[in-house]
Image 1: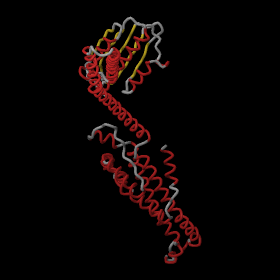
Image 2: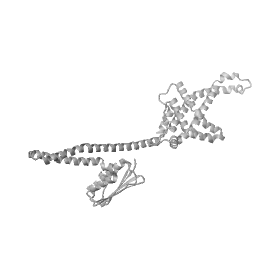
Image 3: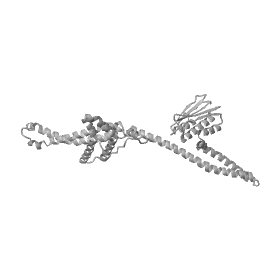
Image 4: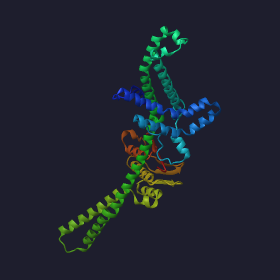
Length: 409
C-alpha cells in the first residue's frame, strides 16, 4: 500500500551510509529541488504575473516531473516510473496531456516542492543562527561596550551557546527528515498510483487474452487445414484404392476379400470421423462463405425443424465468428439431446458493435447451467471473448438462450 511505502521511506533504509556521507547525500538531494520550485515562488512573490507563471508551470508539468524523477534517480537511487499510458492508445497531444499529467503531480509541484524548498532555506537560516549562537563566546568580546549584547551578556551567554549547540545537533536530523519526506511524497505523487497500476495490468491482461484467443483460433485453423489437406486426403486415397480392389479382385480367397472389405469399411469410418473432427476444429465453410452459410449447414444437420434468421450489418472478427458458430452448434446439439423439442428458432443480429444470438425451443425447459450441463461450456466459450450468456428456461419450457458477443476484439 502507498501508506506503507510512505512510512518505510520516512523511516529510512536499514543500511544507511556513515553520518557525514548521509548528511551530504541528504543535503545535495534537497538542495537540488530548490531550483525546480523557483517558478512557484515567482508566482507567489509576483502577484501581477502569478496567473501567467502558474499557467506556464501547469503546461510544464511533464518536464518538471521528468526533472524530479531524474533528481530522485541520480541522488537517491530511486526510480519513479512515469504515468502509465492506456494499452493500445496512440500518441498525440491530447493523449499525451491526458496520460502524462495527474492531480497528485500538480499537487506535488504546486505545494510539496515549494514547501520542502522553504524548509531547506529555513534550515540554512537556522544553521547560520545556530553557528552564530554557539560561538557567542568567541565574538562577543569584539562588540563595543554600548552593544546590548554586552549589557545582557551575563544573562544570555550560556542560553545562547547551549541553544546554538542543540540546534547544530538537530539540524542534520531535520535535513534527513526533509530528504526522506521529499523522497516519499515524490514517489507517491509523481508515479502511478496503485489503482492506475492495477487498471494498467487489467488492460494488459485483457489485451493479452485477446491475443491468446486469436492465436488459439489461428492454430486451430492451421490444424484443420493440415488434417483436411494431409491426413484426410491420404485416407480418402486409401479408401478409394481399397474400394477399387474390392470391386476388381474376384479371384482371391474369401478370407483375403473379407480383410479388404473390412479395411475399406474402416477407412470409410475413419474418413467420416476425421471429417467430423475437422468440422469441430474449424469448418471450412465458415472461412470460405461466412457465418450465415456455416449456420445454415448446422441447421440442416439437426434432426429438428430449425428456423434460421441471420442479419449481419457489421463486420465480425474471425475469432468471434468461430465462437458464434460453435455456440450455436453446441446449443442446437443440447436441444436435440435433452429438450424434447419439436422446433427451434435461431436469430443472429448485429447492432451497436455487438453480435446477438438467440436460440429458442419449445421443449420441456428446466435447463440450468449450475448443474454442469453443456450450458457451462457455452458460458465459458462466450466469456473467452468478453461475451455474455443468459438462459431463460422455466420447467415446462420454453427455453431461450441469449448470447451477446463483441463484433471486434
